[in-house]
Length: 119
Image 1 (spheres, rainbow, N blue to C red):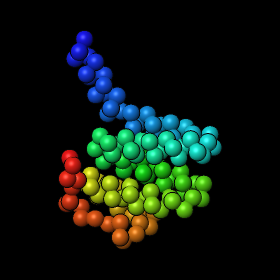
Image 2 (cartoon, helix red, strand yellow):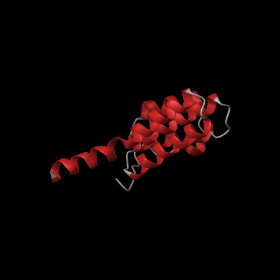
Image 3 (cartoon, rainbow, N blue to C red):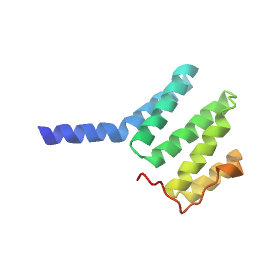
Image 4 (tube, rainbow, N blue to C red):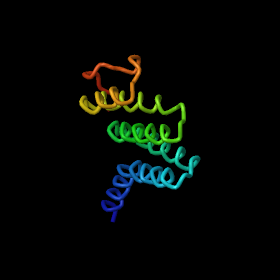
């Protein structure tokens, strides 16, 4: 019926970025660099599209971890973006951990009380 179809579509939208993130982790574990990078980026873009800043933060964090593991210079940018997302979400302790562990640039800091305008 129509309600079930609507719920199915909503559920797909809410969890698609998580599926993409799992695929990225799978590709990363199997040393499939191009596929892993593409899946991380797809997860991030899907989280952005549906305004899921918490999922965006996690995807950036895991992307940063993966890029660090393959010695990719873009890892620091992923951590910076993860930090900003955690701050926007209000996960201040997590943001602090990212900042301290991964040496986030001071430029990447934002006001923890400032929230996304598109929520």
